[in-house]
Amino acid sequence: MSDQKPTFGHVPVMLRETLEYLVPPTPDCLMIDGTLGLAGHSSAFLSRHPGLRLVGVDADAEVQAIARARLEPYGERVRFVNSYFDEFFVDYAKEAEEGAAERPALVLFDFGVSMFHFRESGRGFSLQGDEALDMRLGSDAPRTAAELVNELDERELYRIISEYGEEPFAYKVAQAIVRERKAARIDSTARLADIVRGAVPSKVRYGRIHPATRTFQALRIAVNDELGRIGRAVDAAIACLADGGLLGCISFHSLEDRIVKLAFRAKAVKRERAYFKDDRESPIPVGEAERCLVVLTKKPVEPADDEVAANPASRSAKLRVAKAVAGTRP
Ligand SMILES: C[S@@+](CC[C@H](N)C(=O)[O-])C[C@H]1O[C@@H](n2cnc3c(N)ncnc32)[C@H](O)[C@@H]1O
Image (tube, rainbow, N blue to C red):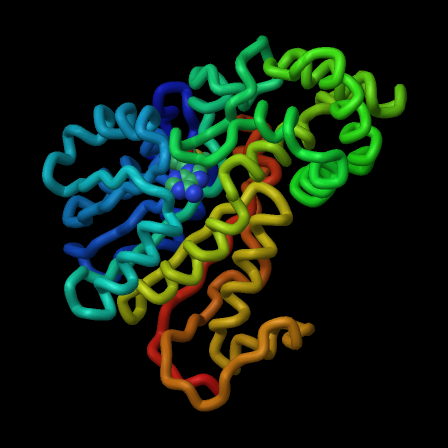
């Protein structure tokens, strides 16, 4: 479909499904794209819905400059905010509560980093080539990946690589990093990738996926506090939504998806909560009148076979969608 044209070599993930689920309730309403990226999703929404107005949030000013150029034809319909999405939505929720900001009818998150980060940023997100180990989305992130790799103690490195990378050989990787950094500081992606390759058992050393992929993911998550920010942002976005508003979240790994699933579950109305088997993790206050959700995707929606064939990077994507309703908790 014409909406799925690549944007600067970037193909928006699950665009067809996102457009199908997030249908504006009125022609002239507000959408907030919490992860504007290269504006692949946003440009498709703006082109399909000529009355839609959009706020595009991204922590990365460089990416946002590209999005700004792409969305220029939409003129005043678009406003750009360079901010972390959790900070943006927490502030926005307060303003909406006070009646000082328009509640959005649509909110979209497409978590992670964009193809720009891997291919062009030069900030050490990619295992291809050799770049400085930085990985910061915003220049105000407190520590670079190189600082984490060279300064954290072995136990904390192990925790990060194991928890955020779900790396089965995290212990060996953390041990190798601490050993090698004594010889010389680890400042480049190529050196870190070699250290990780040397640390894992030979049977996984030369597989289809580079053995350092999980370690790189873990460091990126830690540098940018990605999981903490997702939790805070999803909760605040739920609080912002207009009645009947729709929230779509695209995740790329189980850690992200779990945060979204639990945030939806915690706000789901009673009828919806019955669908979830184990409800004990999210105790719900009794009798409080507040924003509730109807979860529209009982199971997360996954990309269709044709999308995975055309864009293998989409294979692990999962979309969850919920609708805001005013309600009283059971
Ligand atoms: C997967 S890309 C989004 C791609 C976009 N949907 C598109 O179609 O072009 C994710 C974007 O979210 C941004 N991002 C990641 N974490 C963020 C955060 N905590 N706050 C704001 N932006 C963030 C990244 O800089 C990146 O541009």
